[in-house]
Length: 225
Image (cartoon, helix red, strand yellow):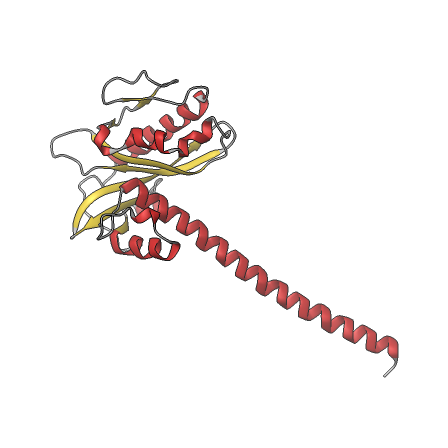
Protein backbone atom coordinates (compact mmCIF):
# COMPACT_ATOMS: atom_id res chain seq x y z
CA UNK A 1 0.00 0.00 0.00
CA UNK A 2 1.34 3.41 -0.96
CA UNK A 3 2.43 5.63 1.86
CA UNK A 4 0.02 8.50 1.00
CA UNK A 5 -2.95 6.11 1.03
CA UNK A 6 -1.80 4.60 4.31
CA UNK A 7 -1.51 8.07 5.79
CA UNK A 8 -5.04 8.97 4.73
CA UNK A 9 -6.47 5.73 6.14
CA UNK A 10 -4.63 6.11 9.44
CA UNK A 11 -5.69 9.74 9.73
CA UNK A 12 -9.30 8.83 8.97
CA UNK A 13 -9.25 6.03 11.54
CA UNK A 14 -7.77 8.26 14.21
CA UNK A 15 -10.33 10.95 13.41
CA UNK A 16 -13.18 8.46 13.70
CA UNK A 17 -11.88 7.17 17.05
CA UNK A 18 -11.53 10.71 18.38
CA UNK A 19 -15.05 11.56 17.23
CA UNK A 20 -16.47 8.54 19.05
CA UNK A 21 -14.53 9.42 22.20
CA UNK A 22 -15.69 13.03 22.08
CA UNK A 23 -19.32 11.95 21.72
CA UNK A 24 -18.92 9.62 24.69
CA UNK A 25 -17.24 12.26 26.84
CA UNK A 26 -19.87 14.84 25.88
CA UNK A 27 -22.66 12.45 26.81
CA UNK A 28 -21.00 11.69 30.15
CA UNK A 29 -20.46 15.39 30.93
CA UNK A 30 -24.03 16.34 29.96
CA UNK A 31 -25.43 13.51 32.09
CA UNK A 32 -23.39 14.73 35.07
CA UNK A 33 -24.48 18.32 34.53
CA UNK A 34 -28.12 17.25 34.34
CA UNK A 35 -27.82 15.19 37.53
CA UNK A 36 -26.10 18.04 39.38
CA UNK A 37 -28.85 20.47 38.34
CA UNK A 38 -31.45 17.97 39.53
CA UNK A 39 -29.70 17.59 42.88
CA UNK A 40 -29.50 21.38 43.24
CA UNK A 41 -33.26 21.58 42.82
CA UNK A 42 -33.92 18.70 45.19
CA UNK A 43 -31.65 20.24 47.80
CA UNK A 44 -33.48 23.58 47.46
CA UNK A 45 -36.88 21.88 47.87
CA UNK A 46 -35.71 20.00 50.97
CA UNK A 47 -34.30 23.20 52.48
CA UNK A 48 -37.39 25.29 51.73
CA UNK A 49 -39.63 22.64 53.30
CA UNK A 50 -37.21 22.20 56.24
CA UNK A 51 -37.19 18.43 55.80
CA UNK A 52 -35.35 16.64 58.60
CA UNK A 53 -33.92 13.12 58.70
CA UNK A 54 -34.49 10.60 61.48
CA UNK A 55 -31.79 12.27 63.60
CA UNK A 56 -33.38 15.69 63.27
CA UNK A 57 -30.66 17.00 60.96
CA UNK A 58 -31.46 19.04 57.85
CA UNK A 59 -31.82 16.76 54.85
CA UNK A 60 -30.62 19.56 52.56
CA UNK A 61 -27.20 19.52 54.27
CA UNK A 62 -26.52 15.89 53.37
CA UNK A 63 -24.36 14.54 50.55
CA UNK A 64 -25.66 14.45 46.97
CA UNK A 65 -26.54 10.76 47.18
CA UNK A 66 -28.35 11.25 50.49
CA UNK A 67 -30.23 14.26 49.12
CA UNK A 68 -31.60 12.07 46.34
CA UNK A 69 -32.61 9.44 48.90
CA UNK A 70 -34.33 11.92 51.20
CA UNK A 71 -36.11 13.54 48.27
CA UNK A 72 -37.51 10.19 47.13
CA UNK A 73 -38.47 9.34 50.70
CA UNK A 74 -40.23 12.55 51.71
CA UNK A 75 -41.22 14.56 48.62
CA UNK A 76 -43.77 13.99 45.88
CA UNK A 77 -44.48 16.14 42.88
CA UNK A 78 -48.23 16.65 42.59
CA UNK A 79 -50.54 17.40 39.71
CA UNK A 80 -53.89 19.07 39.31
CA UNK A 81 -56.75 17.98 37.09
CA UNK A 82 -55.30 20.11 34.30
CA UNK A 83 -51.67 19.08 34.77
CA UNK A 84 -50.62 20.08 31.25
CA UNK A 85 -51.80 23.63 31.87
CA UNK A 86 -50.04 24.08 35.20
CA UNK A 87 -47.80 27.12 35.21
CA UNK A 88 -45.92 26.19 38.37
CA UNK A 89 -44.51 22.92 39.68
CA UNK A 90 -45.84 21.88 43.09
CA UNK A 91 -44.22 19.49 45.58
CA UNK A 92 -45.45 18.13 48.90
CA UNK A 93 -43.56 16.99 51.96
CA UNK A 94 -45.03 13.81 53.43
CA UNK A 95 -44.15 12.42 56.83
CA UNK A 96 -45.99 9.33 58.08
CA UNK A 97 -48.39 9.85 55.14
CA UNK A 98 -49.33 13.28 56.49
CA UNK A 99 -48.74 16.48 54.52
CA UNK A 100 -46.21 18.61 56.40
CA UNK A 101 -45.78 21.32 53.79
CA UNK A 102 -46.08 22.34 50.15
CA UNK A 103 -43.38 23.84 47.93
CA UNK A 104 -44.11 25.84 44.78
CA UNK A 105 -41.47 26.58 42.16
CA UNK A 106 -41.07 30.35 41.81
CA UNK A 107 -39.27 32.28 39.10
CA UNK A 108 -38.94 35.89 38.06
CA UNK A 109 -36.65 38.67 36.89
CA UNK A 110 -33.91 40.06 39.08
CA UNK A 111 -31.51 42.88 38.30
CA UNK A 112 -29.36 40.97 35.80
CA UNK A 113 -31.30 37.85 34.94
CA UNK A 114 -33.77 35.22 36.03
CA UNK A 115 -34.10 34.09 39.62
CA UNK A 116 -35.42 30.62 40.44
CA UNK A 117 -36.37 29.08 43.75
CA UNK A 118 -39.03 27.41 45.87
CA UNK A 119 -41.65 28.94 48.16
CA UNK A 120 -42.71 26.53 50.93
CA UNK A 121 -46.02 26.82 52.76
CA UNK A 122 -47.34 25.36 55.98
CA UNK A 123 -50.47 23.18 55.63
CA UNK A 124 -53.51 25.38 55.15
CA UNK A 125 -55.71 25.97 58.18
CA UNK A 126 -59.36 25.17 57.30
CA UNK A 127 -61.46 28.31 56.99
CA UNK A 128 -58.50 30.65 56.53
CA UNK A 129 -57.69 32.40 53.26
CA UNK A 130 -53.98 32.69 53.95
CA UNK A 131 -50.97 30.40 54.26
CA UNK A 132 -48.02 30.72 56.62
CA UNK A 133 -44.71 30.79 54.78
CA UNK A 134 -42.54 27.82 55.75
CA UNK A 135 -39.48 28.89 53.79
CA UNK A 136 -38.14 30.54 50.64
CA UNK A 137 -34.98 29.34 48.92
CA UNK A 138 -33.45 30.95 45.83
CA UNK A 139 -31.04 28.48 44.28
CA UNK A 140 -30.29 30.15 40.95
CA UNK A 141 -29.71 33.85 40.26
CA UNK A 142 -27.42 36.34 38.54
CA UNK A 143 -27.56 39.07 41.17
CA UNK A 144 -24.70 41.30 42.29
CA UNK A 145 -22.30 39.78 44.87
CA UNK A 146 -22.59 41.55 48.21
CA UNK A 147 -25.92 43.15 47.27
CA UNK A 148 -28.69 41.19 45.55
CA UNK A 149 -26.72 37.97 45.96
CA UNK A 150 -27.53 38.20 49.68
CA UNK A 151 -30.84 36.48 48.91
CA UNK A 152 -28.85 33.28 49.42
CA UNK A 153 -27.53 34.33 52.83
CA UNK A 154 -28.87 32.71 55.98
CA UNK A 155 -29.95 36.11 57.32
CA UNK A 156 -32.32 36.69 54.41
CA UNK A 157 -33.60 33.11 54.30
CA UNK A 158 -34.41 33.26 58.03
CA UNK A 159 -36.95 36.03 57.37
CA UNK A 160 -39.20 33.46 55.69
CA UNK A 161 -39.09 30.74 58.36
CA UNK A 162 -42.36 29.38 59.73
CA UNK A 163 -41.43 30.63 63.20
CA UNK A 164 -41.51 34.21 61.88
CA UNK A 165 -45.18 33.84 60.90
CA UNK A 166 -45.27 35.64 57.55
CA UNK A 167 -48.46 35.23 55.52
CA UNK A 168 -49.34 34.99 51.82
CA UNK A 169 -50.90 36.04 49.50
CA UNK A 170 -50.20 39.75 49.72
CA UNK A 171 -46.62 39.55 50.95
CA UNK A 172 -44.68 42.81 50.63
CA UNK A 173 -40.89 42.91 50.60
CA UNK A 174 -39.69 46.35 51.65
CA UNK A 175 -36.91 48.36 50.05
CA UNK A 176 -34.65 48.30 53.09
CA UNK A 177 -34.10 46.51 56.38
CA UNK A 178 -35.50 47.08 59.85
CA UNK A 179 -38.87 48.41 58.66
CA UNK A 180 -41.08 45.31 58.48
CA UNK A 181 -44.21 45.33 60.61
CA UNK A 182 -46.92 42.70 60.76
CA UNK A 183 -47.26 39.33 59.05
CA UNK A 184 -47.43 40.66 55.48
CA UNK A 185 -44.15 42.60 55.46
CA UNK A 186 -40.58 41.34 55.17
CA UNK A 187 -37.40 43.38 55.29
CA UNK A 188 -35.84 43.61 51.86
CA UNK A 189 -32.19 44.05 50.99
CA UNK A 190 -30.82 47.58 51.33
CA UNK A 191 -29.40 48.81 47.99
CA UNK A 192 -30.94 45.83 46.18
CA UNK A 193 -34.42 47.18 45.50
CA UNK A 194 -34.90 45.52 42.12
CA UNK A 195 -33.92 42.13 43.54
CA UNK A 196 -36.34 42.55 46.46
CA UNK A 197 -39.15 43.63 44.14
CA UNK A 198 -38.43 40.70 41.87
CA UNK A 199 -38.80 38.23 44.75
CA UNK A 200 -41.99 39.92 45.92
CA UNK A 201 -43.48 39.63 42.44
CA UNK A 202 -42.57 36.00 41.88
CA UNK A 203 -43.78 34.92 45.34
CA UNK A 204 -47.16 36.64 45.00
CA UNK A 205 -47.67 35.48 41.43
CA UNK A 206 -47.02 31.87 42.44
CA UNK A 207 -49.30 31.93 45.50
CA UNK A 208 -52.12 33.64 43.61
CA UNK A 209 -51.94 30.88 41.01
CA UNK A 210 -51.84 28.20 43.71
CA UNK A 211 -54.80 29.70 45.60
CA UNK A 212 -56.90 29.49 42.44
CA UNK A 213 -55.78 25.96 41.55
CA UNK A 214 -57.38 22.61 42.39
CA UNK A 215 -54.42 21.67 44.61
CA UNK A 216 -55.42 23.63 47.70
CA UNK A 217 -57.30 20.74 49.32
CA UNK A 218 -53.98 19.08 50.12
CA UNK A 219 -54.85 15.91 48.24
CA UNK A 220 -51.90 14.36 46.48
CA UNK A 221 -53.22 13.69 43.01
CA UNK A 222 -49.89 12.76 41.55
CA UNK A 223 -47.31 10.07 42.04
CA UNK A 224 -43.82 10.20 43.37
CA UNK A 225 -41.59 12.35 41.19
